[in-house]
Image (cartoon, rainbow, N blue to C red; front, top):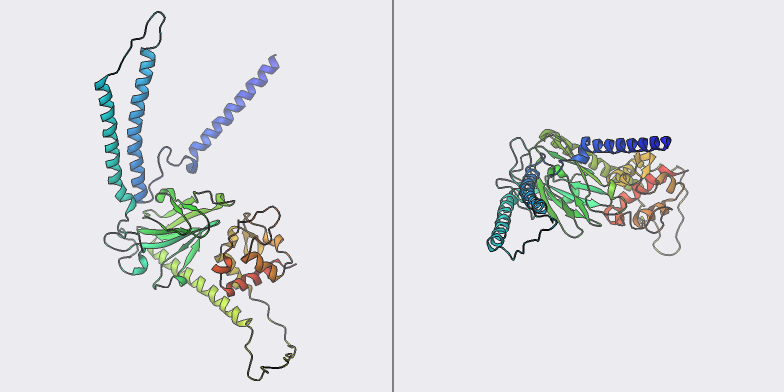
Length: 408
């Protein structure tokens, strides 16, 4: 008996310690604890307005809760059943009924008024602060449909949700959106600058949310949502997709890196140069491996002639362009590939799945990913539109790179 009691006491002590450790870990973990009972704030004015409105509603709700529950507990104690006592028969109190009806109406009017007052600062962009990026001129800084700040333009960034990563497209100095700089997973913005977002999706429903920078907005195929923020502190603000969008939903992270204006301008220049270099490399490969057109000396009818065999060995494909396409298309966010330095586990390990496969198989796997599914994976996970989003040259470069990277 004594031994059983000791074991029971030890189990209770161990359980208490584990529960205590769990509670402490939740309290001290900033991500889990967040702002406790209210939304996160401190990153952008609209996030602060959301937090303020929430606190006002919470305070009013707390007063009502305490009043109602207090009256209930008082009534339960004061008028509890007692032996030998007969409960009084109450048929209503007109003044009391009118009072709580009018009181509830007044509370609703107050909350509605406060909400509409705060809604303007939540929804409508404000002017950039001194020290922010100069967006006062240039149509490339304005969203087509979203209201602009009262005294100028806003830096407009296109946010595109894809299974399972975010693509951010930035404005440049012309109206051709095809040559704009872009990035994946991490958005880079200048401090003290009003940033408007055009939020969309190219496959399924996603949801954009960086809690400290504002509210949650869905990314819906065929529809564009609008929001804004103005980061006033340097640093990285983190979030992730807030709408269950498929197998890789939990890994669809997003972050906003806030830098100084000179740092942002330098980053845009460098990012544009990297994309331009990748495009030039792809064009060079296209010219290198292009099939020459027939010349006038070749017969146009009758039997064809066989060209003499080349005495030189063809140059190996330049895989640098394909590696750049692998990175820019976001392949590394889902797949492991040693040659690209990626270790993601959402999709098949390409070092194994494509080992020894020819160019035709790899090309089909990209443009028609549901044609053959690797064991342990399901259809509908990989986007089926790379055949449209990648040019023929980019697709060929990517295939050449994967063939070289996974050959036996």
